[in-house]
Picture 1 (cartoon, rainbow, N blue to C red):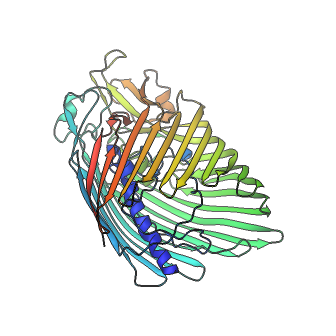
Picture 2: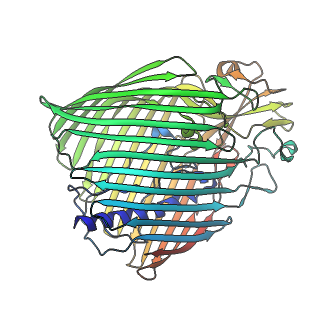
Picture 3: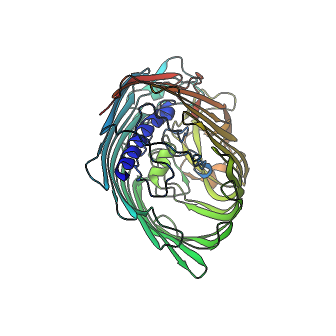
Length: 607
């Protein structure tokens, strides 16, 4: 029984991953260099209420959407915590085989192919392979251009995964490689200057090619069957090597351990570990605002030591966790730093499984290593070296629980106090005035400013399963920013929301729809007339007597996506993805519009 349960779960996760990728990534060209983990299998533990269903080519999983070209949340500080599904039972079904192959084509000259394979020959081990190719060779219309410009992208992934189930723990091993490419195709507001259209120009990156390559190894051990009073020791080790076409390289390694031990009348917890990151061919100072070829690239290395001890008191109805988060950071580019934040949380369950009230205070020290920023904004200056961000305090509270047997909800509010938040802008120079910008050049890559800010966030999430055939997810966030120095929280939205609906029409046909909304944002171009005066520190730039600041509104995003899968036989299915059905060619970053309405269709074969 366990073996079949494991098989059902694995195949379901494969199909859900496949469907999820297209709900978001075909929507926008800026998703061209997204690097994701396509499949993270999880072996069901003994506490699961339901056994996992078999793979269905029609299976739809609600995507964790972002408007970045990568599958990480764009606004890292404000990511949505997805609700757990309302509990319902699903009867196990017959085995479907070893894997799945998909292939298709779409407009914007977009070919697609993907394959999943998993072994079913061992009792306690899951082994599998995954490969994928998606690319586009289309053109896009820029705001100031009469002709379309080339805006190609490509995504290539290969992964090997292994999970072995011991008596109470799961050992996971993943090997992965990703190679992704894109063009710096955008230019803000005006038409592209003729100088930038000259072949092999070195004024800025317009029209040039960038690639990201990443190889990774991950091994972890997790106790999935531990009870409340059991001692546990879990660990995770990750290493990746990241490189770019422009010459930047990153080595990143992290070992983290999680320990739980009951003692006295409570339970002690400790999350601790060490992280090392080294990047080369980057700017060698944090505080410089630099022009291309004006600073000799260098190296940066950081060693992080993390310790987060805490102690939990109380029972199932009321409990409190008291602790502290601590970090020691040894950085080759600046002085050693020690950071502390509280870790306090209280929970009250007035009605079991119906309502939970929670509140607390914590904080976080966020490592802005090279690849993290590159994935967040791939059009940032390739030689970037970004300060780490310190969330000194986060006050939070709210409710979660069930509105009905099959409806989960969450309502919460957070207030964060943040130091050194990175914000993106573009730089203008040349012979220009406030009313005549035609003789100027704007860098089409992004530099970074820092500011301290307070953020008030309200969050609402609802997940509803009306039957085994339909489910619905609604989530929304509203943000209020209070800046210390700058006028705006540049490129951050006032609100965002998501609505996902999946419906199994019949055994053969399944449909799903995803609507994504992002509120208006303010983008920034800063300029100084004359020759490019950089490098300058952030302070020198903001206090320059001739500095001109231009604010541009990025309109509200409405992005509608529709998916359909029709099962012809037990092995063959056809699928279609209609993305950006609102025909809105919005800009994720100033000067970088996404693909408008696009469609991708093809054939799936399970074996």
